[in-house]
Length: 216
Image (cartoon, rainbow, N blue to C red; front, side, top):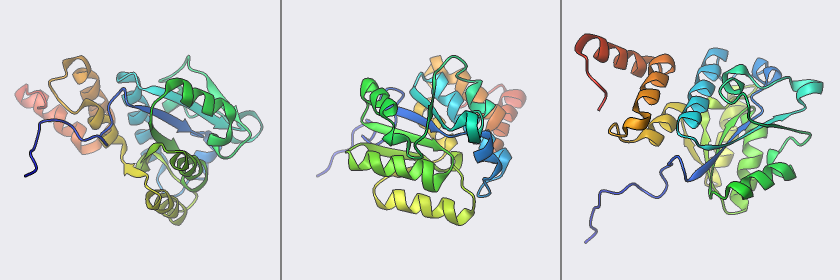
């Protein structure tokens, strides 16, 4: 008989078991994205960036042709990591840039989490490349976007069919916290939620204001 134990599943993300790649979250790419609203993209990018900062996740920032074409990384991400290097590439597939590979190998995590623009190109290609090399890949679907809903969906389909795991921005934040008794990150997690997580955040504000209740 199979026995249950009070231990997390091996596929769950922890702050220390993965590398986060934030790819091509740039002004031109965002302007041409139609699968999600600009507000939704900016909100979810903020949740992901602040979650990574709160939990000290190993994070790689990268852009493509920033000066000549696509513009700077959006402030929702850049302001959270003001001192971090942003690797600017010529390759559309970030995984084909030797500097990205060197950073991934130096960090040494088997799980790769991706978010950025556009889903069917800048996200799916490194995801497929990483999967081929044996990494476990997670894609934060609502922190990605594309020029059409069809393009975003087909990009997600292609990655999922090859084994990538789709998650959401709020799921990412809460999966890293995962226990409200983790007091060292409780305040930051609830603050991010109250500021950016829609109805869930409103619920936290209501509970704390009306009843003085903590989450959990």
